[in-house]
Length: 266
Image 1 (cartoon, rainbow, N blue to C red):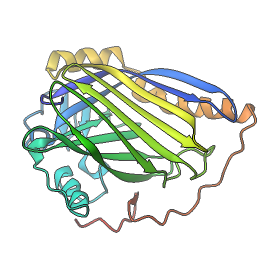
Image 2 (image 1 turned 120 degrees about the vertical axis):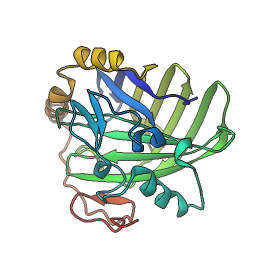
Image 3 (image 1 turned 90 degrees about the horizontal axis):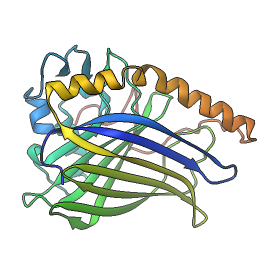
């Protein structure tokens, strides 16, 4: 379970099974932080700050809409639409921080627990390269608790992420979490078959200044090179014969656009 501020250090694996086989694995890191501690500036130090300039930072305008409100306030707004109430101290965000003002953050998660530390809902924000985001609210069918959390949620795909995929299919999310490890699997299922398999897997290490510095040094070029690596993979897909699709107009209320969003004032 998530009950302490941590740094996630691991890999992201992406495998496309059809119409062309294609896969890659890259190292990655993310921060797993209590929203209460984050927003009360308890985690700020000489390397990291919330909504301030540091080597590493998290900006509230980049999460759940560009409104100048706390991430928790915006999360609460989305949850209330589902009839769910969660305290800030019971929310943990898993996200990639900015590095020297730059970030490539394709997906982040907010894990929401009840007062008994049962995982009851996961808020997933998926970002594309068109300055758009989409929020999926995933109620956990069987609330997970204890030392190990294992949960699975399905949701219809509603957001254009890759120019090589249309809006067909269903996402299957699988979460396996304990105090020291995280494994998140995202399967895109089309015609009852897994078309794309993505897995984030790694260890949770204590959130300390020493570990932040070590993580930065070990992944110094990651924030600056990952976008170029993604473009390189797109070129390889094009060479394998996949067609480049035009981005459709998103009509969902859960889609966030950089310059305009219905939820700007939660």
